[in-house]
Image: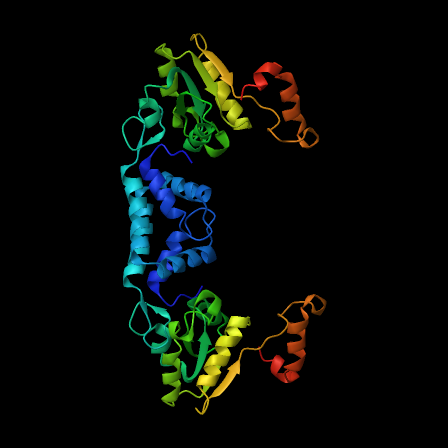
Length: 205
Length: 205
């Protein structure tokens, strides 16, 4: 592209470093900011810098947090005996949005993936094992995505917990609420039949 | 969405003010920045702030510029007698990319559009008329998009220039190079026949 301005070129180059943002989109976004009042750009950049400089990871569950211990871990009403293991803070948000879970979380920060060079030591697995070995936790819920990497990670943690007295479970896999059976894939449909639940319990939610 | 962090919520809210960026995309972009080194966020925000604070509009053609007069207007090799009237600085870039135009530009900053409350006085039309009346300019090329608003704007400027000795032209409308005739719309195909050009001139570029 033929920019008549170095400042514009620089801003577009930086904007297009964001994932999924190409040069043309970056130009459109930057020109949009130029048309808005200066205050908007100032607030935008301040919010990003504040976040990047001041954000913390909860020392208990590794969730994103403004404080040393996140709101969820600090909440006295949460059930401290159940820990849900998730990959990413977006999964915490997704589960929180359901309002169906009252336990704590543990954010791994990824999945074991030798292809991407990610081994157990790069993830927050050791701190989970130590937390469980302290004895307060009674149940671990694996809520990783059901991919090869997710299953590997689940199994690795499961093996690490051998001999430790703790219940382990995974979230249910099955047909989405509202989906039609004929369009479901065989693995999902198969699992939903194998792991069928008493009819009365489906009436609760 | 259920953010566990005010800082995150703020950053996502600001990011989602960008056009075409929803809450989910904003969250993805912000979390991406969090995973990158602090330096990237600093450079990104600095580039945006620098641009927003220091960018100028060329006092001659209203193109975006780092200096009082833009590179194109300051270039002694450009033909100063021809001015191409465009809506937006993106159109300047698009025409510059063709390397087929050696004249100057005049950026209107929009099109006359009563529906959006944009009248001639909000656009850089007066300065164009004054520039033409000074007498140096011999040809004006209208390069606005061929919509109702574009045609209205062209016609308004054309009327304002009544009595002034200046040649006016518009960019050619026709079938895109490489397009097949059968898929072209009638208006475009009709114009491309009416405004046919001598065969020899099509051999030049």
